Amino acid sequence: MNIHFTNVKWDCDNKNDLKKLDKEFTVDLYDIIPQDEFDDILSDFISEKYGFCHEGFEYDFTSSEIELGKQFKKLIKDVVNELKGDQNESTHTK
Image 1 (tube, rainbow, N blue to C red):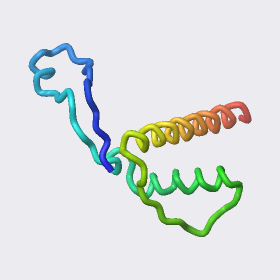
Image 2: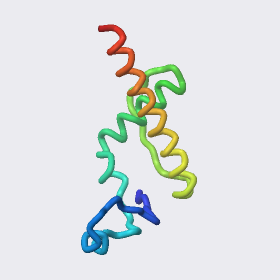
Image 3: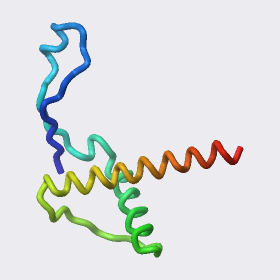
């Protein structure tokens, strides 16, 4: 699955460098998150959602890329917040 970035506003002082940078581009999801890490995120998500461990699963992207992007963004935000929570707990327990 591809993620399309648009209207990228680079933080760059050198105008020559800025001219070389794309304002729009497409990236494969697995270039951002390796597939095994993505699969682990999905695994944790479905176990937490249903409250049961599992012995494996298959998945397919069935929504439009726009809707899937919204769902993926929420999933990643939830994972990041969970990781932040784990870090806060470990610093408080020391």
